[in-house]
Image (cartoon, rainbow, N blue to C red; front, side):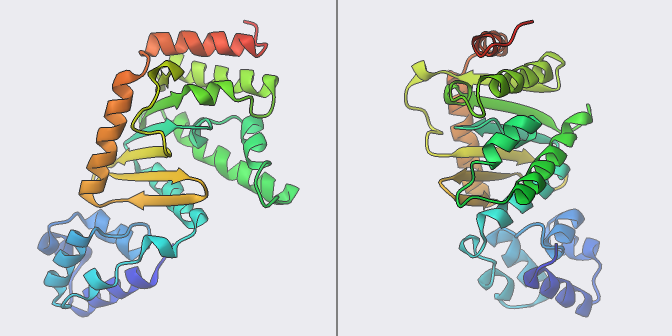
Length: 265
């Protein structure tokens, strides 16, 4: 992916005669985290940037010129998240309005992406659908990542694409859960207000990098990797999950809802 920031870090590291592993040891980071920063796939936290400055004797350059979140479009954030999904060992999703992207069927994805505003061409819609289905391929591997999906009941009740599309989509989620590939929990209307009312949330954990979070809502996306921000969002997820329906009850509601949409076993 590359970035000016990552390229500059690589130049300074090589000028200092250090390998990625040596710099990682000096900055108390992992080698792969350094590699992701240099490739433009990650932005270091402020504390990581300060440690890199100390290790490379670069004053406060790396901490002062961190790429700003506001400089990126939602599409750029989404691309970062798509790449990071492939590296995650655990993903926890909260869906406020739509089924999470990695769980979407082709027809449901087309209904969602086809409703974009401003409108996109059929060719662009096709390209986006293919990208979304490519993301879902991480579920083909039974080993990784572990995926939890918490769905606001709104996700089930709003008929995206019509009854037939919804029935197919809901049963796709049911089958993934029945085979043990994912866990799914419905957050029912009866809960009322909950800590995740304002946006969707994705939490990701990695083997050799700090965890991060991604929030999106109203054409605004944001990747969070500052430890304090990630912990706060993890806490909100946990609070909402504590009010969600258990797996067995959630699956029963999903099946009943699919039947209401016209699915028959």
